[in-house]
Length: 401
Image 1 (cartoon, rainbow, N blue to C red):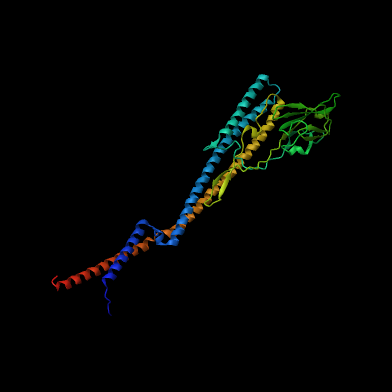
Image 2: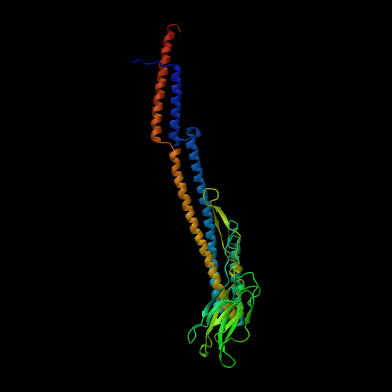
């Protein structure tokens, strides 16, 4: 079999190619990367770079979400403190429903209550995360508001059956309108108040109902003129009609209490805080924080100056505790959502991170084989060139060179 002659040009070309292949294989072995630049595989390099960018974006988004979670945790802890304050205030209100208290006793109760209300306000105004206020209502987000409500919180059972209060209805449409005019006690609109109905002995000894009310905002106490007979309907207070049961002399002393909660106007402003919670444009999560100020919780005017006012304060504080519970529930729900978002981001980042090596990482076994083969080729080519140089030198000696 004829062996074709290897020219020096072919040998040098082969040497260069073998050396380049060896260097490529050694570089991939040492770095562990198949793609050192776009020249190593333009399409694969572009895909691998995009995948790495997505991984970095998911990791950054997870950090954003974790920051929001931490801020929400700060708000939750602050609301726990406010809850403790409201519980103390309620205990003071219960202690205030006592006609045996002296004026000095009531003054002491009121002083302590005022301090607690001020502390609740301080918590609402100063709780922040990295300068963003959390509990002053600035980032409460949109809400639907709530209609006015009238609830019977205590209702005496009558001796001949039934309850002292049998029904409560709205006296006019403005009862559930937070901005509309009102009729009767309360001023410009239905206010937070407590209506107390007590069965007493009338002028002729017959049982009648005496009705009083306390306005939570002002502490104003009014007593409706006249008395109400069994089965009558009480009106003129806070836009509600209260229908009484059929009571008798045996029911004298029995009491019913109606708590009226004013309507809260809706808020259409989307004032929530936003965080980029995903890797792509528009993947944002809104985080909202309620208003825990005394005014928003409707405890700014806790009044313990009389037993009637203290009774009203109990209703105020029960409502405030319920509102605070809703805020805590909302924060907890948001924290659960944020935790799931972090998990989703981390899962996506891990999956993309695992996919990226299939394109960019080198197969060390293959590259080791490639480097060995390239090294052998390079050595063989060098040997061929050395042999060629030796033959050339022998020829030159014939010419005396």
